[in-house]
Length: 456
Image (cartoon, rainbow, N blue to C red; front, side, top):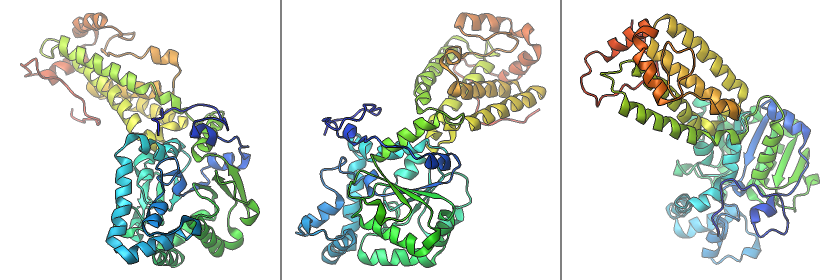
């Protein structure tokens, strides 16, 4: 299996030797689904086909491996839960759980196959309107790659009111190995809990007002049939309209009331949806994150040069340049870390953050906490960098000195400004001398933490 690049942007080609290109089947994007997505009214149901059991990930699925080990003819079409139950009867529960965990560990230990197993999750991560995910999968990719809080046990419902994404793991999680729903008996107990338990009640309440989008299921899928039957039985006529995104051409939409079947790859569907959302004033193109690592490296390089050339004992006002650069660094690092939550893909939210930092800067300037002002200036500029065009990005200042009317963009300019700092902004200079007081070693540097002091 060849290594594939992270950005695989080839167009659909049914004759391509690349299976990813063959799976990008063209489709018509339903306008109602787009509208519901922007309104935050969709719930994703994710099956094994978007994750580790996608046929492109491993030569054989878990089902095939277990069935073959038991000597079951794959043409018999024995149900997934029945195969797991037979394995448990022969080898015991512990061995079944170990086989499942070993499979996940193997996939996660090779970046090539992990990339294939997580394409859907990575694409989904920046879709900021999405807040609820329901999955029958055991892996932890929605938590790790989409910033979702897992709801597995009834006790987890205490976290339902926390902000951010939730993933309802109705068949358990590999992080809680005893929670896994695998055998026929497990399935019976699982759906009985959903009918009478707290998570099931919350799930039904949530679904009553949402549009359901199923990914990663086939029409023969035991999980899908269990879920769909459960929803029909529990919700009846109030079952909301749903969309089934699948590569299985055996799906007959007439067999699934109020459902629209869309034949294409799940990750490709999400990429197409996000491209459509770019026509709105809300959604930030994923491509705008690509320059952040290089910008971060540039700031680190500038920071190292500042520390090397401008010792604090001789240039106390370098405190403000260091604080400014710390703000930039923290902004860029947090963007990269929180990208998976979709938090920074909502342009309106980023603009709101920028406005709040303008106000925060004013308050700290009035209080003459100049090191905090410099840090805020750097953090604010990092946020502006994210949503700006290339011309604005190219003008990003790497240095900061109080009293300058224009940006400081070169080391010689920084040196000239530092020499004039005692007269160009006397209050800031006095504050810098106070903060640097007692520093005798040139090995010490000033570092601003990602919070603000409130000392006089």
